[in-house]
Every structure is written in C-alpha cells, then in structure tokens.
Image 1 (cartoon, helix red, strand yellow):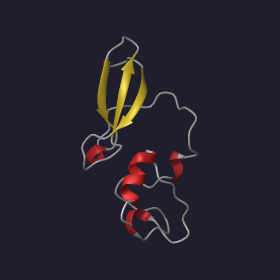
Image 2 (image 1 turned 90 degrees about the vertical axis):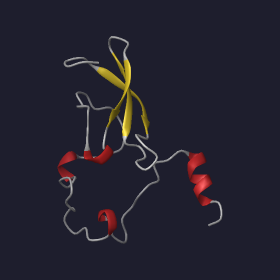
Image 3 (image 1 turned 60 degrees about the vertical axis):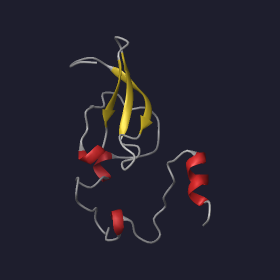
Length: 100
C-alpha cells in the first residue's frame, strides 16, 4: 500500500493460531496485497477511512483499551443477560461443538 494509498479489506484472518480474527488481508488501489494486524497484541496497522455496512457499533460506546465499560465486571466485560453472537465460520463452530 504505502502512506496515503487506499485499500479495501478483502478478508479477516488469524494473525496467529492463538489470536483469531486479528488480521486483515488488504488489496490496495495499486494492486498490491498484504496482511496487516488489526488487534493482534493490541496493535493496528490500518486506519479506517470509510465505514461500510455491518453490525451496529458506535465507537463512543466502546471502552478504552484495557478498561471495562460501565457496569462490566465479568470476564471480557460480559455480564448475565448480554446478547452476543458467534463470529466464526459454521465449520469452526461445528468442530468446537463435537463432544459437548
């Protein structure tokens, strides 16, 4: 890519086996392609310039990195009654369900 270039996230991947969904595969306007950190060990190599349609998330509602949001006391800031979703491919979820 390079400074000032624009690219499009083509796929979300694992940066490592221990850090799922922590990297983005980007295709740049000049045709270059590369994998970048987006959350791996708290690091981000990319900056969003245009949002796309997706889940309703408001950055103002997110806690600061390393801090829990108001009223969040459980692991990962979850509490009983929170609505969540599994953001994994069907095959991965099915493999995790085996034996449980």
